Length: 400
Image (tube, rainbow, N blue to C red; front, top):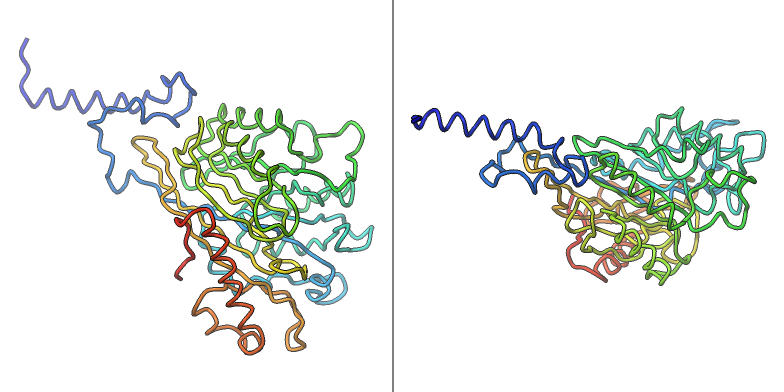
């Protein structure tokens, strides 16, 4: 039987359409659509404008709340306004499709006094401010997670839920802990997993190890596997680890990062040292991305710590592309905004404020910042740039 060229072309188009529709069901490797590019014909178009999704996932380091911070933010009585702390970086907080941060405090309520270090208990208004300035997801697994005990852990979860902030790292039950959080970020499914190296020697409630995710290899391995089984396209492992105030990662951090890589993590983010540490790219193993990214420590985003370099931080921006036809996902670039924290030492303004530490930003800073803290801002940029360039020259500061 003979067919004309028009019929053959129609048949070829129909074949490709059917192939695209059934691919997710025939992928025996993962039963997900993540690896479809391995099965799709090379003849399929891959560069049509409407077939490409571009998203930005950003993260900051530690969101702390020392006593000086909430005292400066107090409006009256039990009312606090933390939102102005982020006014000068707000444009960069609202840009990404997904913004992450490490909440290093608890919301234990007014039944116990508000407190900063060493046992953090912050006003609920802090959660409302974090939500209002653009944070989309918080990790709560850190060494201060158990500062106000089991009740504080559960109440913190309740306050974050009421504020509408998704979170992971601390949990209200075993079932809650075993529930993987999957977030759709503009067409890409993302899972964030969070683990802490300790709870500062404060034992979790007897028989309830699920209250805080600790850096347990079996737990991490199983959580990554479960995430893949649930068709997560990107798995982000957020570690709270390392030695405080050390500006390069230690062996424990490197070992934990390598473990996450070996088990299929796409992106690895770190906090706890309270100072910035280098970033790098790596060859993945069994992950979605061919090239993954690690930030060993993103430093403090906001705090009242006085040690050198603890007032410097970053907003790290990971720009990611997905080809909807092939299923291929890749990091196209990574950049960062250097930040610097003003700690309200000037009588003109008693507040902790995060400022962008890039050239030109000082043109809209308040006068007392320009005159008294200009050198600190310049040093913050210089220090941050040096740290970010230590392992790779492919991560650059934002230009606007």
